[in-house]
Length: 326
Image (tube, rainbow, N blue to C red; front, side):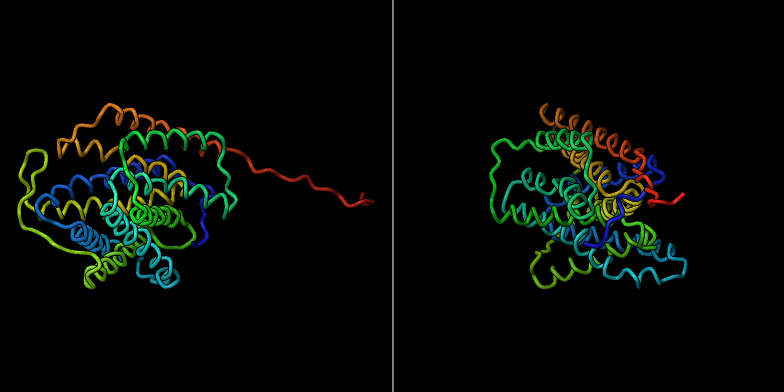
């Protein structure tokens, strides 16, 4: 993994938090919208491919304009763009859907969304960014809430599914770590555009060689009791849950850093439960509501811990004068 800059001072933290929430909420729409397409005969691979491809087409012009004619940041960061597209986009999507073919959705999501803990561990072991006690307490609250939200009663684990889910977790962790890079010179729009283009190309290759089955349907989709054309659902998936979600995610990571942004990202799970209720009529159980409150509390506590860390002045070592110097 390329060097992370999460330890550098950040500006615009309020805006970063708002952008992170927008990113989490827009990402969370993908599940309920995709579920409507699955019911009409769409395969997960087809939905993911079309979603990412539309996102790439929508964001790419803005990413090019953001460069202002200077393509040197792209040339300097080709490896980063390839890693972002391969891990943060393609691997995250492909590995998750591969995991749910072998295990239940709840455990797969729990493993994938353990990514904030992986981000914390990476920054601690690789960059010496040890989390404070408040941050650790927030991690514990959020983890407990995530277990309740996903409602894992009676869940079974499959070794192959666990391996794929861990792959998705690595992809999500890379997404947050690379979003937080402030030393690349790449505008957020350009990073998001490059990642989506690379991700779409890799997913298209997987579909072309038959590794990722792709089937679709022109049948309309039923959402929230309304009949919606399939193209409208696909457009929403591409523009909102890929284009807007990735752009705001990069912008949030630049302002917050990898660790805080990854924990705000847990709101995606809570928001997905809400949208499943709105669009699919899947009423959340009381235990899931309690879990959602715990996740929210954990995110708030983590943000407070990170803010306290930023306010702590650096330790200045006293200067020792050489012996005999007046």
